[in-house]
Image (cartoon, rainbow, N blue to C red; front, side, top):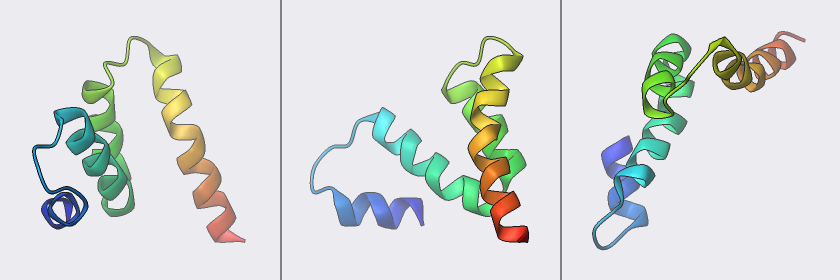
Length: 67
């Protein structure tokens, strides 16, 4: 999915930052734990607050799906 999206959206070289964002977008839908692990390295989390900030949108989305 990531490779196809990159290929479809871009015709030339793509910055690694862009690839990382596409990976995260696809990963959060596939495996939320893997997403948080990837995000913690990719975005260089410094403390627990960074984890909480990243988790808030996921938790809200999951909560709204349960209703």
